[in-house]
Structure formats: structure tokens, C-alpha cells
Image 1 (cartoon, rainbow, N blue to C red):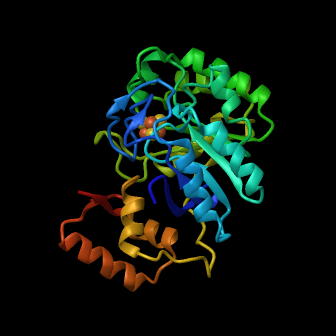
Image 2: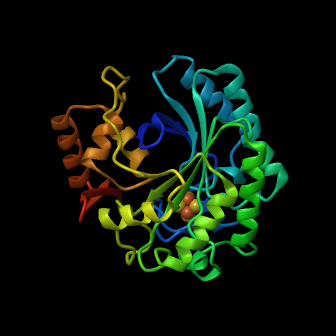
Length: 309
Ligand code: SF4
């Protein structure tokens, strides 16, 4: 599969087929916590980075078998709203496969553009990010492309919320020492009140990010932040629920593992949940992949993470 990956067990969306619309790694931000590594093409240029019709053909071929999925999610190794054809692809999915939830995970940087907002209005769920409103914290965490400004982003998110009829979760990634101080949290809370998402999702590092200095937050610190946002509805993103039994297993386990690790480093448990294979089979496959130099293992607080070498 060139443009699709997974399905993976998403923390938010259940069993989700990923659609990656930009080449690795094309994004308007270069977030310090990014699981995909450093952005190599830092841009705000909207373009047809991969052929729209090629993505639609691959989706049709995959979905023809009526796989058991909860969602089709635009995410992957960069910013999906940079792709000029995302609106056409969403329209195709909703017309042909209305039983699947269509979700877009976006960094929200382009939503001040009316055309970009319009392109994702057909989705069922949109999950934009907003990690900081203060210029200094925003620049430290998000390391944006030239011209991106957090105030303009917030205005775009406010407009999008007015136009979008689906479900909007706003994700805030907490980087301790940068955006967890009372002044920045107050700015974020004010922005959230203005935007009015259905829910705020607080996230923090649980796997290796692009910058080694970023540390995870303690559970108690996250709970304090959740309370700070009261009365807004806030969810601390947890671990995924186990994948339902009987879901189609990956035909080629190594290929499936590589497909997931290409997007993010993962623990054996992450892979187990995403792939639905036997633990012994997965462990043996990972061991042989490490031995052959295809992947490496890195030990962190949350456990051993596998990543592509
Ligand atoms: S976390 Fe998302 S927005 Fe940030 S650099 Fe990675 S892909 Fe881009």
C-alpha cells in the first residue's frame, strides 16, 4: 500500500485505516514531540503532493473487501490539509462508504484559509491541535514554517467550529516547562472557550519524539491541568482499548510492522494491539527484525520502543 497504512488501533477512533497524503516528512510545523521525526519539508504550500486519483483507487481496492473498521483517518507522516485533493477524497469516502467514520487529524495551521476549511467540512470528526497561544511557547514547541502565527490559527479554529457540523476534538500536547505554566494554560483555556470544541484532549509524550529533551508528564500533573480547564470537557488521552477479536490479521506481519514503525516508534504492546497477532509470533518477528538490522530497540520509561533504523 502506497498511501494507506494500518489499520491501527487508534486511541481516539478505534480500528482505523490511515491515509497518508504527503511524502515523509512534509508539514507546516516541526513539533518537538513529533513521533515521525524532524520535518524535512517545512511548508505551508497546498499542493497535490501525491495523486488524488491514486489515493482514491487504493482506498477503493482496500475497502472493496468491506474490512471491519471503525474509521478512515487522514494522518500519517505530515499535515494532511496541505494536500489539495483532500476534499475530493473525503467526498468520495462519504459517498461510497458512508458507514465508516471519516476523521482528519490536523495541526490546524491552515484553517484560517476558507478553502482549506471547506475541504474538510465533509469529515465526521476533525481533531486539530493547539499547543500554545503565546508566541514564545508556540515557537518552542511547534517550530512553525514562516508566516504561521498562533493568533491567526486560533481565529481559523473559531471560524472552522462555526462552519463544521461534525465532532471536533481539540488536542493540546503538554510539554513540561514550556506550556504547563499558569499564564500559558490560561491563554489556552481562553482560546478553547472561544473555539468551543466538543472536547479537549490533553496529551503528553509516551513514545520517543523528535527532540530528546521533551519529558513525559506525571499522571498527577495531567490531572491538575484537566482541573485547570474546568468547566470545559477535558479528556486525558489514555491507552487504546484492545482490538476486537476476529479482525483481519495482517497478511505480511513484517510489512505491517514496518508500515506502523515508519510513522511512529512503538512498543510491542502498541504493535500487539494494532496488529491483533499472537504475542509469541510478534516477539519472535521483532527479535528477528532487530537481529537483521531492519529495526532498532530503544528503552524508555514506558518500555522498549521499536523504531526503523
Ligand atoms: S506532530 Fe503533527 S503537526 Fe507536529 S510536526 Fe509532527 S506531523 Fe507535523
